[in-house]
Image (cartoon, rainbow, N blue to C red; front, side, top):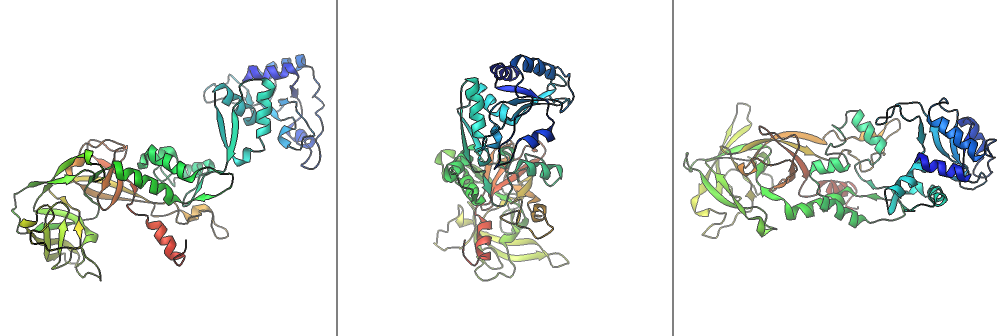
Length: 457
C-alpha cells in the first residue's frame, strides 16, 4: 500500500501537506462554496517522495504532516477535495508494533485492499454512495484491477440492534457474555445458538436487496431456522420443568424399550429405542389438578397418551405440606402400547416424557429476544436503548433428556418434541451437557404483537 502511494506521488497525484487538521478544515469550504488549495499542493514529486519517506521513518511528530490526494478542491463532492491518504501516528500496532508510524485512511485503503485481494463486488451500506467516486478515482488513477462497489441499506431487524458500536457497548457493559452470546445477531452468536448456514442463506434470499431503508421482522429469520431444522434436526424427548408420574400398576423393576422415530420429515434418519419404566417425568405445565376449560392434558380422572408409549389415567395427586403437587399417580393400559387403543377409544392429548431412572440431566439455556420492544430505540425522555433490554432474554433451567442424547457433540441440533429446537453448546463437557434453545416451535412474539395491536400487524 505504501508503494502504491508513492506511485501517485510520482505521478503528481498526491502531495505532502503541512496544514493542521483545523487549518485543513478551514480550506475545505462548504457544500455550497468551493474549497481553497493548500499552500503545499504544488510541491514537486521529488520533494513529496522525500517527505513521505521521512514521515514513514518517524522523523515528524503526530499531526505535523499528512499525505493528501490531489483531486479537486472545487468538487461538489466534499470527499474529492484533496482527501487525506496517510496520517502520522506514533502508536504501537497490535501486529506491527512500532514498525509503522503512518496509517492509511479508510477511503485510501478500501479500494486498494479490494483490488489486491481480487474482490469482484465490494458491498457497502448506503452511506458509502458518496464515497464511491473516490473509491473509483484511486483505482483508476493507479490503473489497477477495479472491483465494483455496490451499496445497499444496512440490515435492520426487530428486537435487536445491528450496530458494531452497540455490540461493543453490550459486551463491555456485561449485558451479554461476549460477541458469540446466542442473543447477539453476530454470525458467531447465531452459530452458537444453532442457526444453520442454510437457514441464514435462505433468510438472505427471502429478504433480498433494495436501495430503500427497511426493518426486517425477526420472525422471518426464525421461520427460516424452523423450516431448515424441521428437516434435519433429530427428535428427542426432554422435560424442562419436571414433575414425576408414578404408574402404580406398572411392574416396579421392569424396563422396556419403545420404538421412536428420529425425524418424521426424513425417513432416512431411522429410529431409536427409548426406555420406559414405572416412574417418568412430564412437564409440570401438562398437569392441572383443577383444569381450566378446554384443557385436554393430564388431570384427575383424565386419560392421555404418552408419546410412543401407553394411555395413562391420573388416579391420585401427592402434595407437600404447603399444598404443592409433588407427584402424580396414574395407571396405564397395557393394551395401548405404541399409542393406540385396540378398542378405538380416543384421547385428546399426547404428552412427551422421559424415564426418571434413565434420564440424562442437562443445563438448558432458554434464550429469547434481547429487547422487549421491536424497536429498541423507542424510549422515553431520558432513557436509552438499554432500558428496553429484556430481563428474561436468558433463563437457565435443569432439564432431563432421554438417554439417546448422551455423548452429543457441540453444535448438533435437536428438536425437543413439543418444546422447540435446541443445540449443544460449546460449554458441554463429558460430565455436563449444556443446550441452547435455538427457537421455539411457534413464534409467540408475533402473536403477542398482534394481540397488542388489536389484531392488526
